[in-house]
Image 1 (cartoon, rainbow, N blue to C red):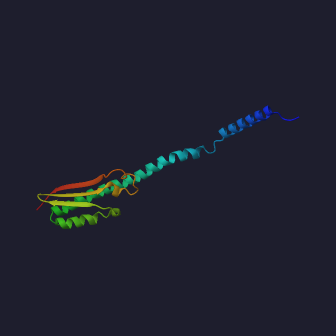
Image 2: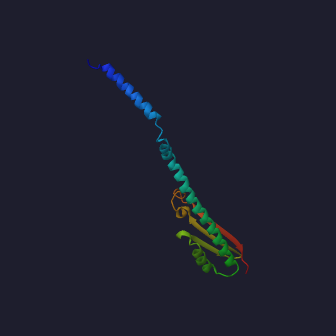
Length: 143
């Protein structure tokens, strides 16, 4: 006596159900799937934090150099031309390109600027647009 077609189909359905139940009960890969789903978001936050940190450190450095340069020009220690060279020498942080403008009158105005895309090392923060980082210090000339 042979096995009928209906019996074969019934066994196939039973076998399929058992495999599906076994597959559904197996949770060994759940952590891996969750990790793969969250990894791009976590990496984006880490890389963005790194770029933001570099940007803030550069902005702080620009203000410090602008304040120091304005003080040196206002006391007569440096001329405007020498002060520009001094400021560019002080702004050697990571080899970024800066623009320095110094105006001397009754007030000394030192303006330092650079583009955000120039500062964004990994390109996350400065990839869109042409935003600028600026530091401007005005100080009364003492002479």
